[in-house]
Image (cartoon, rainbow, N blue to C red; front, side):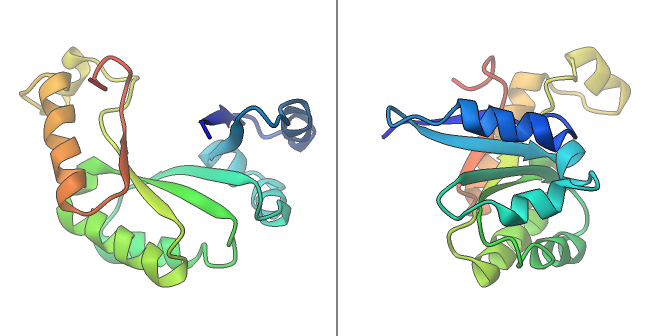
Length: 163
């Protein structure tokens, strides 16, 4: 069955409840993506923890730190057994992504780790300003290969770079 993820990009639990209620269907598998905005809000994490395991939950935290800190952050999610997808930044490097995958496997083998490549808010010009010399397309391809080498379950990239 095809999967569609709906972004719950708000801190308002009432809006999220409405989104979930209004998107129930037997035609598709509907998943819900929660980013840092919702997760870090006062009611966000408790709300996610109460969702039943039959919901497809995508936690878009885009973790990016040293391998030990990312692993520890993933271990801290152990109580959220309903998370099926979790993001890390590919720019965190091979060792960090491997550590993320290893930590996820230890707490819940069902969590799929996805590597986020270049953020859609960045342009070639903005990347040059922070020290990158290559184009977005080149960086995304390189990072996608790094995600594969790290054993991640998938890649998140702009539709422009997806092909």
